[in-house]
Length: 219
Image (cartoon, rainbow, N blue to C red; front, side, top):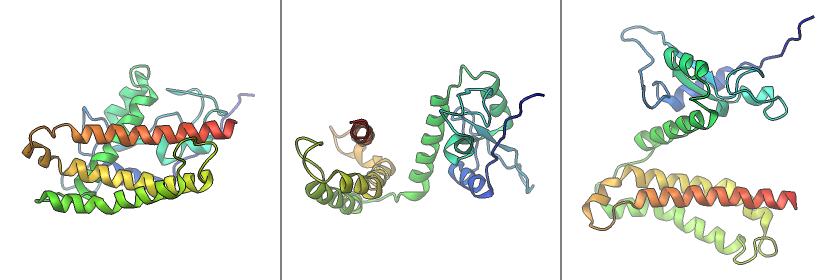
């Protein structure tokens, strides 16, 4: 008897989130096709799996590495037009999972900057907008984050909790405001490139935290 593999399908909430994250456009940055034809209440968007819904598909990994339930999570799905969906699956080596995750991450960031972050006319207003997040991050660092040895000082449990609940969301808000207000960079000589530097620092901080937490778990 042939062996069958169960498949977990995305639920309605997952589908709704994917449409919101995509902005209604194909997630391939080289395509960006609008997924609604004019004057018709239909769409031609398709939910594409990064890691396939069941082992054996494009970019496949074992069920031990990624569970069937995780494959139906919104983090493993990207909204594409029908053409791009076909291409990424038929040429999966040219479109590895890292590429698709990057497409997805960048599109979400674009939506947040375009809609979720205000564009200011005065530099001081932009600064005031991010000041609260900066002050909160500093207060958390001062109270909970170890200064020298991350394994022997401070409160690692509360540090991790505040990093997830406060510091990382604050950093994302700061970066969104910076990216939405890059026009200020062009007005001041010598300040070009501050947004890429901030983006690199924030992402580097997040990676460092993940490594430190993983090392603690191993030790």
